[in-house]
Image (cartoon, rainbow, N blue to C red; front, side, top):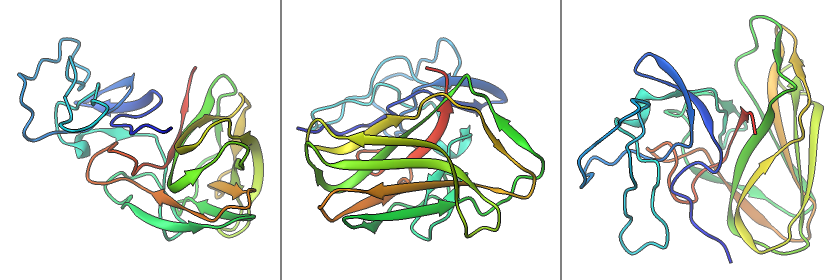
Amino acid sequence: MYRTYYNSPFEITYTWNGSQFKSYIGNYYSNFSSSIIDSDENGIVDGLNPMPYREANDEYPLVSEASDYKTIAYFPQSNNVLSESIDHAYSEQIEFNKVSSVLWINNIPFEKTTTFSGEDHWVGHLSFYSDFHQGDDIQIEIGYSTTGSDFVPILTKAITLNSTIKNLPFYLDKQQLTIQSGHYLALKISNLSDRNNSIYTGVTQNVYYATHVTSITTSHL
């Protein structure tokens, strides 16, 4: 069994209307049928948006268009770039074949040495074209690149699936991650199973919509 997500599976830090917030994030609906009430003024509509003919609802619909929300999330793209921009993280499929890996590198080096706190988890979400099954193994690594083509892993998470899934929320154990000035943040995902598959990269025109989401961010759990 698997379910469709219409909002992020983890809380995301974002800036909206000049202020910073942390919340689950859904999508923007131009034809939103209910009155828009945002009592805490965090850019998330109070109440949910029913999805017709779907088994799930969007519980965190956005007050305004997705481009108004600036996040610190990173979105893998089909050209192996790890993008910080939602607007440029187009949804496509890339091959994720058995016993193989995919590496994404942020195309903008850090201007100064940056440390991500060891008090926070790196969390993310993977979306696959076909089912992975119980007992299949996936490995997730976050690290950095010194040249824009190499990879130095720092955080590693090996996952053995306990059910059939197309969507995989994940988190890595808390550990400080320091990236030196001039280096690049990088993400590597390995398919250790004997099953060929594809990964949906990026997002659609919304922040989070259906299964077309693959991303990572930091979050205090």
